[in-house]
Length: 360
Ligand SMILES: Cc1ncc(COP(=O)(O)O)c(C=O)c1O
Image (tube, rainbow, N blue to C red; front, side, top):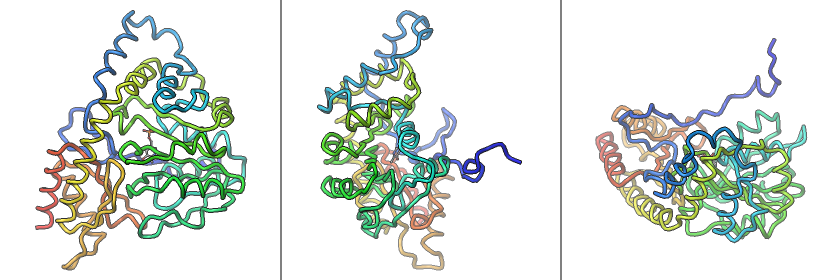
């Protein structure tokens, strides 16, 4: 007999991309981290927090993460009472389940997308309505007017890299009968547009951002939610009081203030992304348009005996054997391709030349 809740006993846990041991010589293009370091203002901010030795660590951190939320408010123009901080945007996703879902209610999302929505639903014992994307990754019609309590749309979407217009997302938010639309903008910095305005104009929209990609701070675990004062206050009621530690708060604030650094790194990533796309296409890969810091590339149409799925898996294994990690999803609609994070120019040249060898 198990002591777990039935839903937890039955679920499969989230499987994160492989994280090799620190110091391993590997080209890591599998979890969409930024290849460049965080702002040079980050370490001094952490050191300043520790200038009295460990004494500061004796006391709890600011439950309101005021310095961080004020920096976010200044940068975006969204009032600070419409901003909530999370231990990564993953924590904010979990908070949404805690705050909004009654037993028996369901969530909805398009497929394929960020796998954690499915994992959190399984853990909560929530019903799940999924609607397949078409081949161009347009928002599926079935989401519009659906009766789910929480509707999740990642834009740019992972693992496709494709994006939805703010107008379409507004239409979706307004069509929901009794649901909250969660616009997960983990990768928005790599796109010329974003849907942040919906957080202040629509009463049932939550926009999520992370520091893990554009701010090179995946290891600090920082995310932000933007929404109406009502929604932010409600989420605040169910969050852990001290969900961000002292060092994360000052690191995040310093990073937000250094907009020049972020923009420069984002521009470098976007430039390399275009090189990656053209290189993959010249090897016969079918690459979806990407507004993110990664691309999804379907294996070349096979000429020989192997299927596309075999080619994609084979390319993944070949890269791995040569010290290059990318992401392979053994899932419907994804198993014939690779998701490849945009690294430095040198890393991408190594990847392309390794794939060229594999193609023979
Ligand atoms: C769509 C999407 N949302 C959220 C996250 C989680 O980000 P964080 O590191 O802030 O928890 C990821 C991470 O890969 C992601 O791809």
